[in-house]
Amino acid sequence: MLLNIDSNTTPIEVPIQREEREIKKVWYLAAPQNLNPSLRETSTSSEDVTEDLQTIFETSSTDNEEQQTKNLTSFWDLESVTIDFRYFTTNFEQDNLLIQPSITGTLPNGDRLSLTSGFNRFQQPEIDSIQNIPLQFDWEGKIAGLESAIGTGIDWFDRVTPALSFRANSRVNIGERASLSFFVEHAPYKFNAKTVENEITNWRYGPNLFWQISPDTSFFSLLRWGRYSDGNHEQQSFSRLEHTSGEFQLAANLFNWRYREDKEIESGYFSPEDFLVINGELIWNKNIFSWLDCNLSASVGQQRLQGQWDFVYGYGGRCTTTLAEDIFWDLDYRFSNVLGDNSNSRYNSETWRTILRVQL
Image (cartoon, rainbow, N blue to C red; front, top):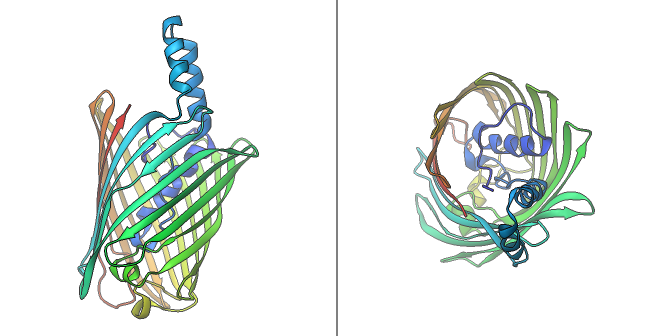
């Protein structure tokens, strides 16, 4: 199986798969560094892995069954390799570069285990750049019948103290078309070079709700509370109502962010006491060729910072190319003028992302 990297999916999907896709869309609402870093991609559920393994057994010949059984009894049956390259920049000369390869495999009991490492670099004016090497382990399976994921890791930096990280979430289905999950994470806040230099860490926790209202309409909402090592507290909420019609998707987004104190000058991160974004989004998906699948999106709306309203817009696109039977390449670009600091200057951000995926 492949890691599920924001692929286009049909309107009728199980809640767990749609929920993961909705979480990814939070990144496209505002500037990527503005939102919860814990809202990252998650891989396909362990139930899907189990179903695929059963299919292998049912369709394989007698000669292959013995070999497949042997592979399944190995400690870690590798299934995919992913190389994730991201570059984020603003018109204030803040640059974040992330290069993170990961390996994912299946354990003998059907659970999934992933290993991620790589190289990250954070740059901004008047601060020496900081290099980072992360090492993360993530497990997915079931705990007490609940689909769950647990991860741990360590981040090494070239000129600050190493930091440990931990994350976990569990999900329960509500009927056939809804699911409720709870997320918790502790990690260094890699917002920019200054937050890394100041060794800011935080706890974030809260629930996610996904509801497939009808085959063509879905609703997703999340709530996050945060506690920072500098004494600050935050609250985030995000809701999205989406309708699909043929190749098009129309969505309404509402994002709210509040901090107890504005710590931007002291600690280096965007920490508004009152920040709200409301927008509408139009998405077009098209399988152009058998080897090329593309997605274009545009959004317009309003943002409020400290009581002042401004026009907000964004646009972007993503194409997935099939290079070979088991090799896929994604190229993604996003632009947004959603604020990322408390200045009155025009704020523009760009994000380039490319992903190479190999099925083993």
